[in-house]
Image (cartoon, rainbow, N blue to C red; front, side, top):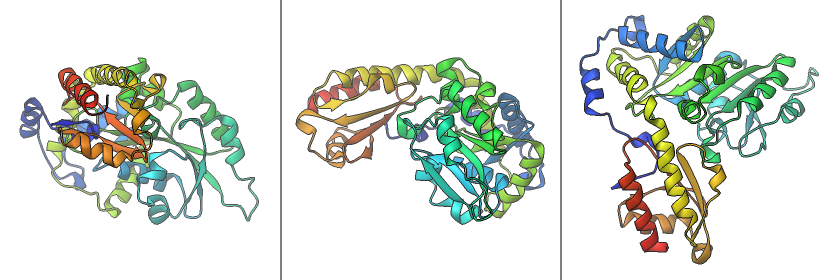
Length: 343
């Protein structure tokens, strides 16, 4: 089986399982889990923030950020391709009572001018614009890295109007690995940042939200309210610590595997891929040639017969996500399956 559906399908290595088994644990709701405290301190340090909080998922981390940075009735600026808009089940409206102002950026990247235009003038009848959320890397743009210069310009536009900033950094580790820019530098303009342990880093579960100590105290209260207060989570935290120390350095290998797959797909008449868009570990490609009128789901069913699994990303778009549980030999096998079936 070659599973390219997501980097969330990774499984803990034996060494990670051993670290989990040996973890010190305590009741995290009482703030007494030593492994969770260590992970939170480590991530806060990496992101250049005062404090961090372990949460079950990236969605919860993003929703906690919105909760602590807004009031009911506020408005949040996001790009149309953002995870917060597309994949979080209407959480901002339900959990925080805010509405999203959706802007059409360039493959997920907003300009400062777009942000300025989206900010409400401030009349008493306006919905108050309170927060701008960006994403790095951008999932629906094929793992695109949010350019740091563009981030800084958007941040300046937001700060000029007194807005807060949140970064959905689920794959921020990939952006740092691909550019050499530290996670701390990418995170610097933001009031809150989320990062994921269970994607490219290969931990079984968990994300963290980081920010000021005061905001993390507020986030801890809302985490409990949202049902995310956990008890002996040291084993999960130990997996995250192990992933940061031992798996983070290997992320460029996932990027090389994605590049190899993309180049092979590019050579096939049945598919179309923009090689310039493949910046990290995600490859988006369209049906072309004899497949141009086919449905993505039908193509995926055919590939599944050969135990190659991807996900649809549109009526005629497929997504392949490379990760640590896929070898370069697996990539070559996937290329041969694609050639045999549709080449």
